[in-house]
Length: 280
Ligand SMILES: Nc1ncnc2c1ncn2[C@@H]1O[C@H](COP(=O)(O)OP(=O)(O)O)[C@@H](O)[C@H]1O
Ligand SMILES: [Mg+2]
Image 1 (cartoon, helix red, strand yellow):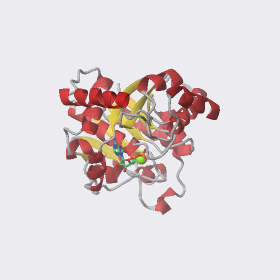
Image 2 (cartoon, helix red, strand yellow):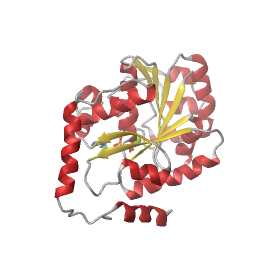
Image 3 (cartoon, rainbow, N blue to C red):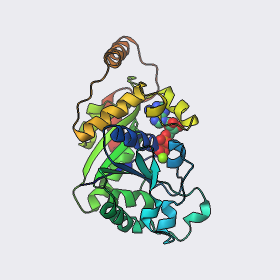
Image 4 (tube, protein in one colour):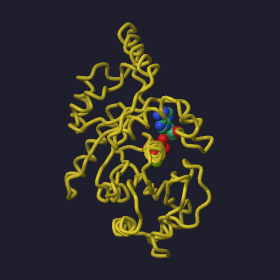
């Protein structure tokens, strides 16, 4: 059976497309058959992040009824993707809500282990389409109160949609600094499991500029390892984090313990918790 995973977030810029593209490649490297779809029709970035320019049709073409959805499926180094159109005029006369029907057709006609949906942020029509179409939802968030608060709003919308979905959280751009909310606290606040932590990694920005996903650009980088650990978790495979990464984490904890905080953000988890609840 194909697992359809929506990569969602309450807020933009948290790393959805980065996670969606690299997670897809990491799953492909684990021998899985992957299709990744750009469901962010307003601001599509998937093809750019993949460094892919060679495609004939887009999701917009299928949603406008110009071509069959199966013709939009494009090969990409051992996996497949469907881009969205970069042309603003292709946003006219599309019905994102018909996406589910097209997805059904893909699932019936292609042998796939995973379909990864790269969502638009927030709670607009495009984002709700993904929340509705996916069986599993991964919320990508950064470890700060406002983005976690946005996840909680999306969780409220999810409750309204039918079907028990498997929901989890991936923390992205984690530095381990003391002003960040820990995975445990996020778990306590949301009651959603945090299934992955991807470090903040300058290489991600360099990889994007080079139009090469971080996993291919620098496979041993901290972010690549975080993404591979997430992929392994999703398929129940074992992943051994290299010793140097574990040592780095311990050193950061020691540094936090001995360094007085200079940040002007809420200083302890209780006040952050309060802030999240007040906003809710
Ligand atoms: N782990 C990370 N470390 C450093 N930069 C990151 C990381 N993840 C994403 N980024 C950068 O953050 C920006 C937003 O990421 P993107 O994946 O486009 O977010 P979204 O799809 O949620 O809008 C990009 O410039 C990307 O390179
Ligand atoms: Mg994006």
